[in-house]
Amino acid sequence: MRILMQNRTSSRYAIAGDSVQMRKTGEYLRKLGVEVEFDFTPEPDVREFDLVHLFNTIPIEDTYRQYRNAKRNRAKIVLSTVFWDPAEYLRYRKEPAAFARWWEETQPLRQEVLAGVDLLLPNSHAELALLRKIYDDLPPAVVVPNGVDSSFAWATGERFYRRWGRRDFLLSVGRISPRKNQLALIEAAGKLHLPLVLIGPLNDGLYYQECRKKAAGVDCCFIDTMNPTELASAYAAARVHALVSWYDTPGLVSLEAALGGCAIVTTDRGSAAEYFGEYAFYCQPDDVDSIVRALEAAWQAGPEPLLAQKVLENYTWEKVAERTYAAYCLCLGHGSNTGLLEDGRGISDPLLGPEIE
Image (cartoon, rainbow, N blue to C red; front, side, top):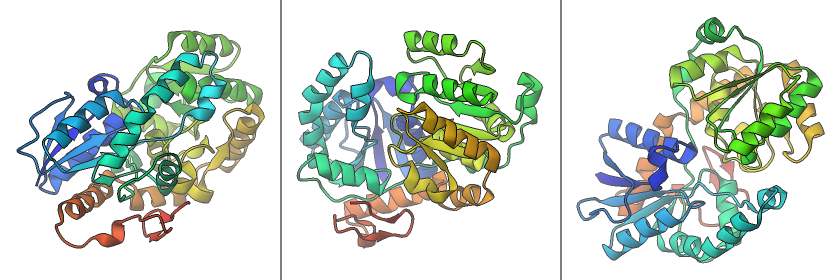
């Protein structure tokens, strides 16, 4: 089986969850014997591939051009949607007009792509339900969750401690940007007098300056991007990991942190609850007091071993690749994996539980 995976042009250098999902899925599919090639151009030659796998529908322009090229060449297309409705986030941005206008202007492109592919691969039942609510005439879907490297389970915090002199702290990993909501997290950490470590690249310079200003008087450390080994040690050294974003699906770093032994605080927006259930602490991104309560509860409770076990059993990249391969076979008519299909009737799924409709 030969697969062409395509993502936005910027994913080659602007690394985010969609690019990690694509690379890791491809890496582990190769271990199953699947031939996988990556491409970021609008019009590659797709004729030698059995299937084109597209990623992401929020930044839609590149995906749309890649989709149109695949359709012209009559290729089979599956789409990892990587979607959440940003409407609430847009209402809270300080200058939402340009982004909101762009979103509305590009909605017809999303509708065409979503309705025109052969199979959707959302990361959760909640994401699929939201897609069905907003868009019309969608094709069948197979829910393929986000994944994590099992190596995060075996790290220790010693490497991080030797380099930074910190252990037993509040950690948040992610690019510094308004959607990730670090400003509110810094305020909440300050109210609780918790030591805070922020790891991630600068995504918005003005927002970063706001965060630095807010961090004055707070025990807060900013660290740039780390390699996976260093990051695994950071998770192992931390007590709590917090991702208080406006939405996440569910956030690869939360999966990594859970496997690394952190107590998990996460946003109640997006699909995190579908992954973590009762084993995480949830907060409202627009309410600092809600964030404070979740942080305080998580700090007192400490890590939940059953959560790490759940992640290791259900959300490794090996399992993601196996499920993706089964979806490919279904799309190509190989075998009879029809039990994977989500047809809108709320069927039960052995991996992620009942569909949310």
